[in-house]
Length: 386
Ligand SMILES: [Zn+2]
Image (cartoon, rainbow, N blue to C red; front, side):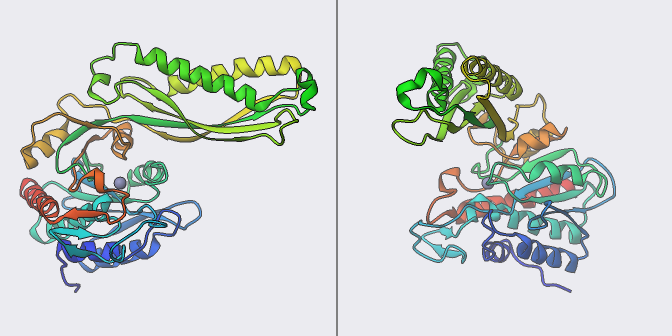
């Protein structure tokens, strides 16, 4: 029989695995599975296609639907080039704070969730408690959708999801969605003295990018709707983050590649924005082909994270409010897995310890007070499910 670890001991253990998204999370998943299995909890895994990453989910309580999922991700962002005062993969307490990569985002919550699951096993619950630990969250929230699909069947379907991203234990009910597109313009090379006979991929890209600027300006001139008005900024805006292209000063550019992302307010559809963008690509491409039929524009979707829409009488929100006493209205501007659970038909809310301001930073920390508040939340949840 395995010893029961405290939330702090669990966090120390989880942080000790350097599960940066580019590296495998399997050593952490192996350890978690051993620990839970040692307490008589059956674990399920869902592997990424290359078997380098796995999600883990588990169920405690009666074999009935309607339980609560505690959702966290196992991956963390890199520490490369960041000045840390202590080893990022060793939890170090200083000045009322636990320092370490992932303490805030979000292995602190993962540890609390594991603690609660084992306690639920021993104390007994009449309403099920589940845990869902994903991979590849930090590279665009791509690990959760296949995990959510894999959960359908092996364990009874839960009704409410608490995503423990750092919210300082406030009940956050909305976030923007995000969609990213990589555009690759294939022009036609000629000597720049004959540019009217070629297609300059960079100058064609400039047309699309400037159109994006114009659309942004139109959006910002509009009165935001009620839901959009909760966000800062209260519009969907397009943003070009990287661009490469061209060969030489005297050659019309044959290639230009850039990445464009929209952060979409939840009252609008990311698909509509994508379709509008693609229509613009086709319009520019048609003009390019008039000069050189072999010129073209390719694109691929880089990420697609649905927004979290505030629910009317949401079960997850009501639960988080009962447990925290928080009655304020909160939305955040970062994407999470909550929108993906909601898209799969669950009621979802974000509620976790720590502040997003400390996430991804050198000397990332969670305050002892926030970690303890998360512990109190889990105790209250266990009473609720008893
Ligand atoms: Zn996170």
